[in-house]
Image 1 (cartoon, rainbow, N blue to C red):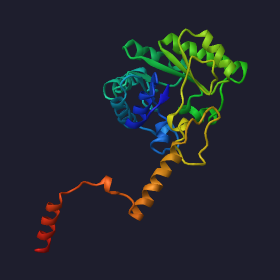
Image 2: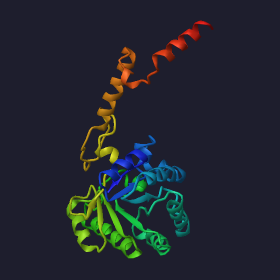
Image 3: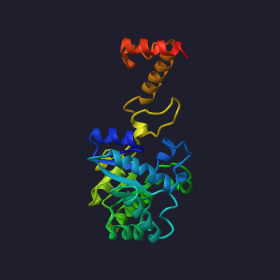
Image 4: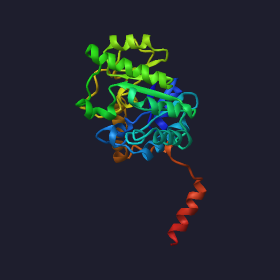
Length: 264
């Protein structure tokens, strides 16, 4: 699984053979420049979902319910989920939370909408954790993550994201569940993995902090920087556009035009 936030990022993810494309609320930061995921609005998420859906031909698409769009009541969550399917053109939704979200998950899945769960570190609730902190580092905390995972499985989730959990804990939880686990900062004992595309492709300026679990597979930002810098220089030096980048006109037509201009 990989994230995408617009037509180009979704197109390349689908073309590269990704099984699942997630329109994550991480787009708040990587696409919209916000401080954290809690700022992104429902309407903004739906706009990005539609853009991604237009690009994807093969991958399974999942939309991330933003903070404030599903926590009040199961009925609110179902209404939001329906909008993600109908307006966002997603095939499933993701929401954060464990045991406390079980009734909400059951409400949505009963309506026929697939739900991807998300337990462990839940970024929308980072302030309740005192920031982005690893979960499951004590026996009691690890048991809490397991109980949350079992609860969302029982409520009807088809899979669950385990975020920022020790690898050994995530592996044990994966073996205890009958649904797949998708790890992000949870080791390779999970059924699958997910990363934010902008992070793993290196499509960000130098100096940005990356979580420990991110592997940078490319340097898209530097490649883009070099391309734009070269374009700027060639425009200034008039090396671009070259003759091969322009449209021709027949010599006699050009002469006729020049004569007409002289008469003005």
